[in-house]
Image (tube, rainbow, N blue to C red; front, side, top):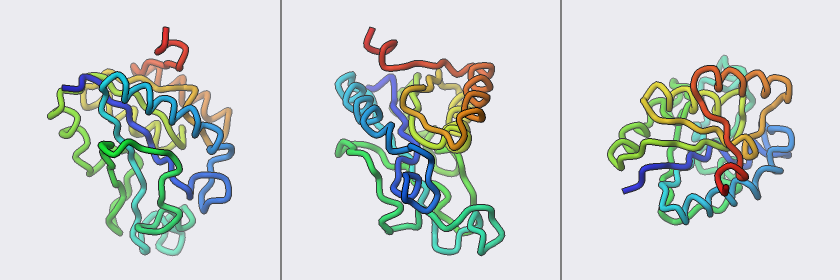
Length: 185
């Protein structure tokens, strides 16, 4: 059984340049995220990919009182992944009901149970956006008792100065910061 899991957060078209809610230069981490997927697959780890999977009338959209433009609507191009995932990857859909918001991959998804059933102890997190869904997923992973690593060379935030603050906050909460060099060493 896998003792570790790679959680790839929200690597979807709408969060890439040209998408409905782009993370600046979010596409630049695609090769590194795919390199991590390959590395963790070789290690026998569980590969998990979270995605926003919003209904057309989601509460987070401006038209319904939220703060975001429409994005990652179920079964649209914008909700598609921009990375190649292995066939056995576990896809976690979040914020998939009109009245439920979810930044964390653990929020209302059963992800903690899925990982615990597979005896996962360590999770490694990468993806977008550092200040929102990556941060929320990392903090929730800690709350659920996992050892948490943030893969710093495979995350991208909206604002570089905010991203640095978030990385510091995550470290202060117990998240370990890692990079490919550290994992391959």
